[in-house]
Image 1 (cartoon, one colour):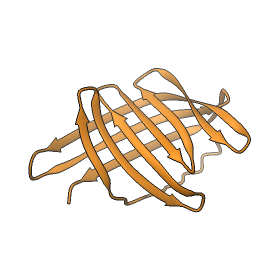
Image 2 (tube, rainbow, N blue to C red; image 1 turned 135 degrees about the vertical axis):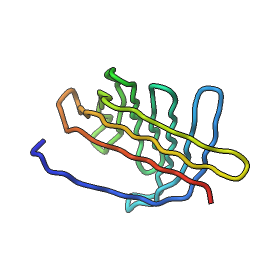
Image 3 (tube, rainbow, N blue to C red; image 1 turned 45 degrees about the vertical axis):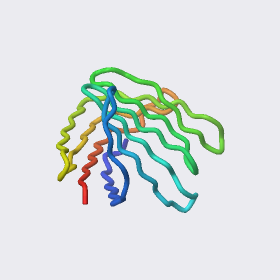
Image 4 (cartoon, rainbow, N blue to C red; image 1 turned 60 degrees about the horizontal axis):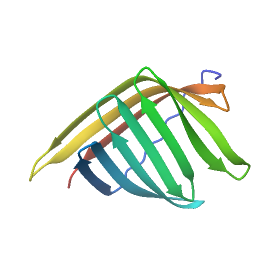
Length: 127
């Protein structure tokens, strides 16, 4: 929390689908540690990022509420908490088009200690 800003961008292929309880993005990242399978679920006031494979993480978001998640590290499971300040999403899809975005602004705590404030922007479009 020293005021430094860092930006990280990924461009990946994946899947988008809707179920009765929300929208889903599913994709794989290949990192040095191995392949990470990621599912991003979002609906009206909440979102959830689930990662499995080389990284195991559960990071929930609910607008204006603190939510508890976890990150499995080589040192054991760490408790993560999010306090979501902004959660906005848009989706447009039909037979010809799939596109949308998810924007999150949240405070992250690890083991109940503040880590920082983060902005996450996910955009997606069909090809």
